[in-house]
Image (cartoon, rainbow, N blue to C red; front, top):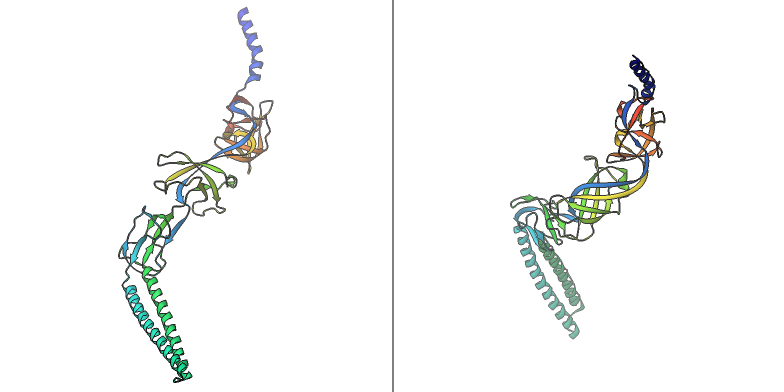
Length: 355
């Protein structure tokens, strides 16, 4: 009987202590200590390799295509013929112009000889000034006709030459939209060339304020679909406009060293940038809650009770958020389990790893 009484007294004395440690209303949650850390972002961008300079070619005049001399992927040199149009009319026009040029030359030569004879007769006193002036005028007209005939020949030759599409520079054919027998219009783009003076990586990145910080920075470039050592480049352009169709921003990075185009043009690539931008109080992503239209987190006071504290977010990173305002170093913040809380609820902290 005495043993049972002692046991009952012991249990009665222990109950207040246990109640102070935990009650049925207490909730076990993950808790982290807010700490200011430097903001370092590993920004990764995906895109493809393009030529720095590309050009679309078309014939100066319209006509029917008779020959296509290149295929996509071919390397071409400056002046190399790429395609030809039917040149029958142009050849005939050139023949007519050359015949006219021959006649104009003969007429100019006859007029020159007649002028010389008229001047010689005038010098000997057997000719008249009127005849000499008339011969001089005839020569001037013949020389004018000769100049017009030469201009006509030049135009006819250019017309014949314009039936041949030539490479303006050393390049690689990246696009072709013509075939023999096809009728094309003047200046209609039919071939796309990528000039071999350099490559660049072109990325379509989500719109983010951090993109304003990457212009001029070095970027590590890794190819995705071919085996190649890592390369480096410099960010040369961040588009100020968002593409309305994709909602992305175009970012361009030029390779630091001139890379051979074989196998690289059009390849998929990933860019890696390590940015140290700022600093902020770091908390885990699962601590983020909402209070009206504002972001907030649950903070734990000395009595282990929680309250919703509004914050202003500086940046989102993988697994964590950087808080610009609302938290200070050393505050206890609820991470895992935050969605089960209400103001004033007591919690039992379970330490989480720092983000």
